[in-house]
Length: 77
Image (cartoon, rainbow, N blue to C red; front, side):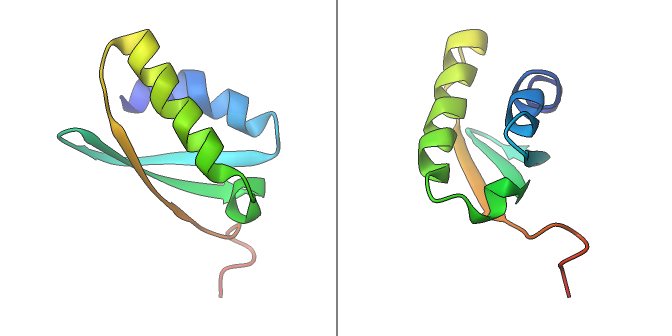
């Protein structure tokens, strides 16, 4: 799952100024961190739904994306 997120999902998120970081997988849950434009996006829930759907269609695995938003590292204080 980490490879799939890094190679397929991440470039698409980066195309809109965002960033996604794989954290871990626990059973049917995939934990990620959204940064960049994603950290302040008003429609992130739609994107999360799209990611869950892509994972299901491309891998056949049904997962629940658990996420947190973080500001870019240079804004974290």
